Length: 491
View 1 (cartoon, rainbow, N blue to C red):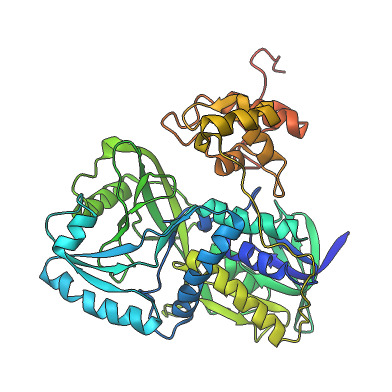
View 2: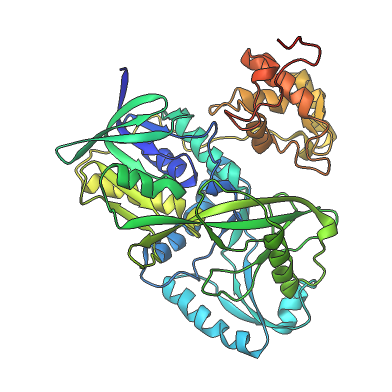
C-alpha cells in the first residue's frame, strides 16, 4: 500500500485545524490536513453563531478563558491579513427584570478576572438607545465591546488557503478509519485515501475527536456529546439589529441570542439538544418554536414570516465517564500515546479561541523537542474572491474589462458572476461542489435560495472539472443532483 509521510498531520479542517495548519505553515515542516468531507469547514465551525466572543463567560482559570481572551485579540490582527470579514460590533448581555439585573455584576467581575477589556454595565435607557427593537422590559445590560461577528466560512477558508499557499497539503474526502500504534507511538492513520504517516498527529476532529482518541488507545473515559443548535436567518430588508444580543446565560449555555451578521442579516438561535447521532443536522418543529419564543423575549418583533433560511449545527461537548461533565477544552500532549496532541471538546467559544489554540499547539510541539525553524518566504496574507455585488459601477467596468466572465450574472439575488465561480473552482482549496461554490461566493443564499442559479452553476462545474453533469454533487459523495438525462433510455 502506498503511504504518504509528513512531519505533522492535522486531523480535521474546521477552524481549529485550519488555524493550526496556518500557524505551522510558518515553519520548515511538512504538514498535511486530513478532512473527511469534500471541502473545508463543513462541520461545527461554520454552523454556529459566528461570534468572536469577548471572553467574559468562561470560568476563570480554565483553558477556555485563556484561549478565548487571547484568541479575541488575535482575530483582530488575523482577519485583515486574511481578508476575512469581521465587524467589531460589541455585544450586550441583556437583563430583563430585577433578578437578571442582579446577575450582571457577577458577569462583569468574571470578565474582568479573565482579562476582558472595556466591560461596562449599561442602564435601561442606554441599552434601548443602542437597540430600539429590544423589549421594553429590559432593565440593563453588560456591554462587552471587544466582541464581534465574523464570516465563519471565510474564517476557515482564509486560514486554510493561506496554509495551502504556504505549502500545507489538504487531503479531502479522507476519513480516518483506524490508527497504527507501535510500542506506544502513533505511527500512522488509515484513511479512505490510504495510509498516512507522521511524526506528530494533531487531533482536531470536532465532534469526532473522541473517536480519534479511542482509535489511538487514549482516554477511554472521555467522550464527546453532540449538542445540536438550530438557527433562523432573516431577510435583511425586513429585520436588523446592530449588536450581538445575549440573554442572561443558563446551565445550558449562553442562551438563544439575536445577532447581526457580516452579511447584514439578523440571525436568532441556538437552542441546545443533546443527540446521539453526530451527523444529525435536522431542523425540528419543536426547536423552531423554542427559538422563536426565546428570541421574542429579547426582541418582540421577531416574526417567522421574515425567515429566509434555517440550519442546525453541532457542538462538541466533552464528558468524562462515568457521569462526569467536561467544562473545559481538552488541549494536551497525550500522556498515553507518543506523537499525539489532542484538541478535543472545543465547543463555544472555540471559533474565537482558534488562533490562540494554534499558537499554543506550536508551543507544545516546541516543548516536545520539535525544531521550529521559520521560513524566510512565508506570507501572512491572502485575498478572498472579489464580490461583484459590493463594487461600484467604475469597479465593475474595470473587472469586466480584465475578465469578461465577471459580466455574466449567474445568481440574481446576490449578483454572483461566472467570474467569481471560476475563481472559486480554481482557488488554493478548489471548490468542487455546489455548496463549496455557495460558501465562497454567497450564491444561492438570497430570497430564491438558489432556484435560479442551480443549472448554470452545475454546467460551469462540469465544464471546469471535466466531469459529467450527473457527477456534480451538492456537498460531496452521495448528494448528486442528476441521475440521468430525461430522454436517456433506461435499461
